[in-house]
Structure formats: structure tokens, C-alpha cells
Image 1 (cartoon, helix red, strand yellow):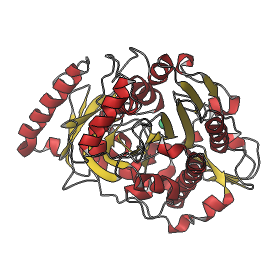
Image 2: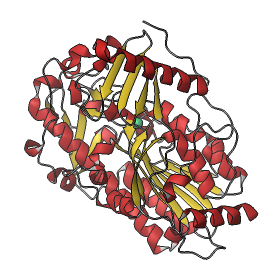
Image 3: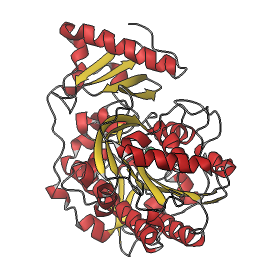
Amino acid sequence: MPRLRILFSLWLVLGCSFGLSADEPIRNILLIVSDDLKASALGCYGNTVCQTPHIDKLARRGMVFENAYCQGMWCAPSRQSFMYSRYQGKQGPNLGEHFRHHERYTARVGKIYHMRVPGDIIDGTDGQDVVSSWTERFNSPGREAHTPGDYACLNLNLFTTELEGRQSTGMPHRAFVSVSHEGDGSDQPDAKTAAKTIELLKKHKDEPFFIAAGFVRPHYPMVAPEPFFDQYPWASMELPETVENDQQDIPKLGIPNSTSAKNGIGQYVDNQKRMWAAYYASVTFMDQQVGRILAELDRLGLAETTAVVFISDHGYHLGEHEFWLKSNLHEEVTRVPMIIAAPGCKPGRTQSLVELVDLYPTAVELAGLPIPPSVQGKSLVPVLSDPQQPVRTAALSLFKKGNALRTEHFAYIRYTDGTEELYDMRQDPEQFQNLAQNPEHSARCQKMAGLLARRLRGADLEPAPNK
Ligand SMILES: [Ca+2]
């Protein structure tokens, strides 16, 4: 495998000093995907309340990408985008297929491509999975909102232990459901995903593999065993800062479908705190499952030959700007966690602007495979050896209502009707003041619009019209 040797030598030159012999470079990729996890919920991204010891431990031995952005604003488009490394649509071999074409064992456990949560989880079905990606695939079913225990539907202010009448698949208030239940959580989909992944690691430790483990938490319903809820007494949760008339300077297309006024949770301040507590409880439960997998990776001695990648498909709103859920282009949704722990690479943190489409070429290059021409992302391997290494000047996010561009300094959103948002992310990281309405910033807006149009054309997409 001359390519492996060339890559390996290149890495040594670049400063990535492997703790391995030259004939044993990175052999395996373990991709871990969380669902609806905002970067700011993790300890390693600065959260001091939410407990994520296992992901934080991975972060301490890997590269933490502080400015990673997703391309799709909800599960289906984001996941398809990073699995194909295409801004939109499918073209070329997807990540799983590419590894398969190169004789790797590939497996999916849980949710990697889009699955309806909770629908496909309750039914144990494959969702929009792409079967050609995998040598083997395994679903992790669970009872979700129907798990016996303390159920709440927080926007309806409903609390019960009854199993009848719970908000579940396809129902309008399912996003505000939490269940705190007895037991150790081994019946939960994410626990099953960890157990199956551990089983596969043991079984396939002697052959090169690409294993993708997809957790469904903290996606609603926020189900976790009681001790995880006990860690977050709801009354002690702090709600996000709000400013008066915050939504007034946001264009119509920038207001998501789920707001405090529309979904009703605005009436129940305590329940907004309970949403944070339940979200954190399910993040910590998911983190525990990550920990189980990583402990097994260490135990099997695979950590030395396996690059571990941790991401989420997109972020989430929990009342910031009185917005809830995903499906909009603001920072809480576009920014995602991304951690890459590759054997031999120094741990660190990087400010480089990166995109989830970059994952595919990075994983492929780490494993010593060629990058197919259909790939639109850029390999982040240079950043793994030098966190100062720039990748691109801006990150692109796409949505049916508009598109967004994030530079180091500014966040710019342009909707399909030509309306705009512009935020100075150094002065106003919470995005309270839309500068696009201020004539003083019209030159900046024009410049960002031009940059966005160029990025879209570069991705074979059409820019939005002028106002
Ligand atoms: Ca999602």
C-alpha cells in the first residue's frame, strides 16, 4: 500500500507524530453521530452545567473544531450531505460505499441517514438508510415516549405516569415530551446502539473497518433513566438571555415554525426550565453510551489504529430568541460539535471554519484511501497537525427558506425573498442585533451576499434573488 506509506511520511513531516510503527498507520474509522445536539451543550464546548465526561475525554485526546457548521438544517438533508460530501443531492459513492469499495467492513448501528424519531425507532425500521453503504446494518428500536415512567408534555403542561394518550409519532406536540424512567436504561435505543457497536468492535477488531454508530438523543422524546434527570433539578436551570422585541428585526422567513408563542411553552416558564433539564439529561445519557464504546475501543487496543470522529447532524434551539427545535439558519442550529481523535495527532482546539461535508474526505484520507472526485468537502487532515491551518474563509449552510454564510467575524443569512440578517459575531455572539437593517452596514451586506453567491455557484446551486 504505497499510498499509506506516502501519507504516513507526509504526516511525520507535518508534525503528526504517530506512536506507531510505520507499517501500522490508521486502519479504522469509528464515526459517532449524535442527533439534534447543539455544540454549546457539551463541556468541551464550554458548558459548565451539562455533564459530558466521556465526550470531553475524547476531546482532550483529539482536535476540537470550535467553528464547525452543518449544511442541512434538519436530520435528512444534513445526514445525506455529510454522507455524500455534497451540499445538496446525491452523487458519487457515499462514505460507506467508498469504504466498501476498498474492501473495508462497514456497519451502521442506529441512526446515520435520516430516520424518523420516534417513528422509525418505535417500528424498528430503516428510515431513509442507504443499504449500499453497509456490509451489515442494525437498528436499535425502543419504546420512546411510551417508556413507562414519569411522562411530561411540557408545552401542554401535562404530567402523567399513564401510558395512554402520550404524544408520539407524527403528533403535533411530540417535541416537548420527556420521560424520566426507572431502570438502568439498557432498554433504550442508544444503550442498544452502544451494546451492538461494542459487539461489532470485538468481532471485527482484526480487519479494517468503518463503523458508524448513530445515537438518537438528545432528539425528542427526551427519555432517560431517573438518575440522569436527578442531575439537573429543573428549578436550577437558567434560561437563555432574552431582549425585548428580539424577533422584530428578524425577517418573516427567519422566524421558525416553532416559537414560544406558537407552540405554547411561552406560558410556562418552569416548563422551559424542564426542557433544558430533560435535554441535558438525555445528552448525559447519550454521553454515557459514547463512553461505553470508547472504553471498549481502548480495552481492545483499537484506539491506536482507529480514528474516532464525533459529530451531531445540526444544533437546536431551546428558547433562544423564543425559538424552539431546528430548521432555521441561526447560530444555535448551524453550529455543530466536531471532534476528531486520530492516533498520533496532537490534541488541540482549532478555530478554523469547517463544514460537515469535510468529514468524508477527512475520514477517507485518514484511512489512506483516495478521495473520489464527487466529493465537495475539503480534507481536514492538515488541521489535525496544525490547528492554525485555514480551510476556507466561510462556512455555508443551506435551507429551503434561504442560505447562510459564517465567516470568522460575521454571520450572514439571505432568504429566498431577498431579505437578510447580518450579525457581528464578535460583538454580538447571541445574534440579538440584525445589522442588515442598518444602512451603515449595507456595504458589508453586499460583500457577504457576493461571497454567498460565489459559494453557492461553486456548489452548483442558485443564489437567492435580490430584494
Ligand atoms: Ca437531527
